[in-house]
Amino acid sequence: MIIYLLCFILFLVGIYGVITKRDLVKIILSIAIMGYSANLFLILFAYKKSALYPILDPILEKSVEISMVDPLPQALVLTSIVIELGTTALLVSLAARLFQKYRTFDITKIRRLLG
Amino acid sequence: MKQQTGMTLIVKTITRLTVWLIILYGFYIILHGHLTPGGGFGGGVILALAFLNVLLAYGREFTGKWLKIPFLEKLESFSIILFLLVGISGILAGKLFLANFISKGHKYHLLSAGTIPVFNIIIGIKVAMSLFLVIWILSGLKLEEGEET
Image (cartoon, rainbow over all chains, first blue to last red; front, top):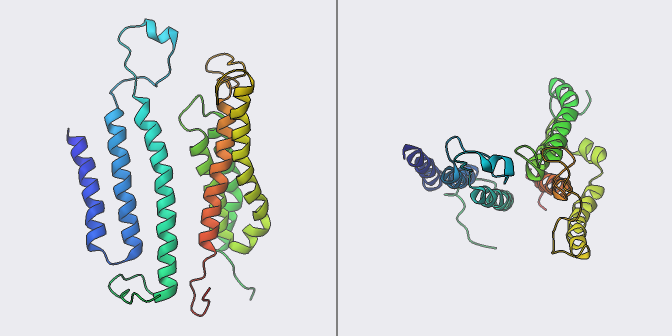
């Protein structure tokens, strides 16, 4: 149980960074930390202590009490990591465009909503 | 004094020594994807990070000459067509899309598991090329003063 709580604390660290920091690069890093904690949460649900890899093996199925790691969250997290990569690349390119326009990464100085 | 591009001599020398080892490790992860943890995605990321290492150490001009970026773009587009062709050949073999149509071989051997190693190799190429091209395009953004694009 404590392990899920630590995972949630990691998520709160990400939210703290998004809310309080002013630098755009630090905000992007905080969003990445939130994504990592969500992935870690899914993987922790699937984890079983002293379980086997999810391969259906006739030799292994005969032996006593086989418990496998759930393969579905691993496949989901692999997709999630790819989507996170795409969103991070999009955020970085948007931050670079803002830097070209305003010459700063500070979000309190990015005020003029002119084209 | 020559115009310095990239990082210092120490970083360049270490990169020259280690980049092929990193690429070899990426190929190892891709080829053993059906046996050990890893696979196409993880190995492809390792390959892309090897190229990123060269880009950081040597700068943009050298990497552009070393890697032939238009060829990499064509490879990235072509790999997904290859994926589709291997998937459709499952239909041509009389089964479903993406079905296995070659021999499964012995379990836990390197040449086994039917079409899964083929898909691992194709996905490894795709992930490596697209991840490196994302970094390449982001590294080409002009942020200096007076370089407005």
